Every structure is written in structure tokens, then in C-alpha cells.
Image (cartoon, rainbow, N blue to C red; front, top):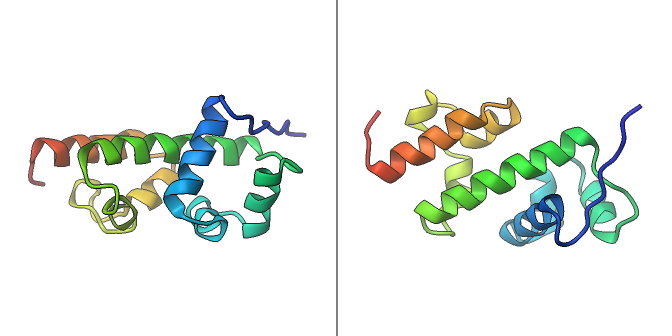
Length: 119
């Protein structure tokens, strides 16, 4: 049995969820990004359901990556960057790597791009 984590404003999870929802523009796009159904995102927004620990971890990972990426590139570029094959990730997309738990590699890719490195 897993214990669901609440999404409360002012918490890291709550702030990360709201930032991702704002960045995605709507719940359907956020659901696609997180790999869940749009109805799950709606229930999280309404407070009638809380994310599983796995979904909470994905929310936190994506929120951190998006915040790091937005600090180094234009905000409008970040969604494109997330779904584009990346030379620093051996051709994988940042989204694929995040879903596989390869967070450190994605952070390394952001750092390398920020420094102007070439793969």
C-alpha cells in the first residue's frame, strides 16, 4: 500500500505542481508530460486525489529541471527542449531521461549548454 502525498500550496510539491501546470498551459499537456491521465491532474488540482509517491517524485523532478532550464534558456524554448533529442544525452530527450530517473544527466546537459560546451 502506498501513501499519497498531498498537494498543498506553499510546499515544494505544491509549488512544483503549480509551476508545471502554469508552464504546460493546461492539465492535458501536464498529464502528457508526467505520463498520467488528464483526469488525474484534474483531481489533483481539485484536491480530491493526491499523487502517488511515484507521481510526486516525477512532479518534483520535472519542476526542478524546468526551473533550471528556465534559468539558462528562454522560457518558451524549454518545452521544445524537453522533447528534442539532446547531444549531451546521447540522442535521448530530456523528458525520456527524467522518466527513467536520469536526472543528474539532464542537469549535466543543462549545465553543458549553459557553458556553451559541444558534445
